[in-house]
Image (cartoon, rainbow, N blue to C red; front, side):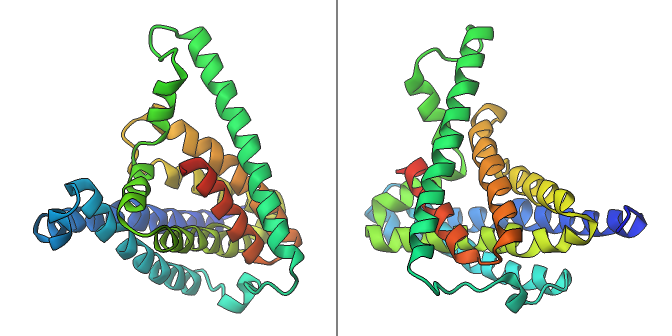
Length: 250
């Protein structure tokens, strides 16, 4: 299908949905969670930021699920067409784990390459100690998950995180990739990955700390979209995304 006015309208519509939810609605949830944490009994047992994260993330997951439904309806992508989410064969579990480790390894290599370039070309503007880089990596929205891990039992914290990454896979692989597919596989992969990368920048304190989520999204988005077009099964991609996220955060 050629690029036309309808293509531009469809892209702008999706872009507005992405900005509307991932930036504005999530910011409102974060603000509400902060106000709730000031009065919650949880704040008497944990620092404010940790109490805020415990309130914030479950709300984000619930609204994220609702966003998936609304976006699928708007894009006319029915949930059965998202691809089966069941593990029909045990090897799919192993496939997801290995895929997640592979994506994490590739993203880590690219991240280290970026660090070395910045340290070499701009030694006065960027830290030379790798520990300072690790601190920057664990800032912004990543810090919210670290706070939840400190307050909730590990299985519950991981379940919340899994719910979040599942929603991201539904949105960017299950909905947006087939949504742009009529304009060609390359376009579908490029746009779904670009929007996935753009989303990572929200709630990050600065451009430097946002580089590392961008690198991860570039690798995860590209590989995930390519595989989903070949094998329309989201579950291995969800598992891979969770493995990637767990290694990166923990």
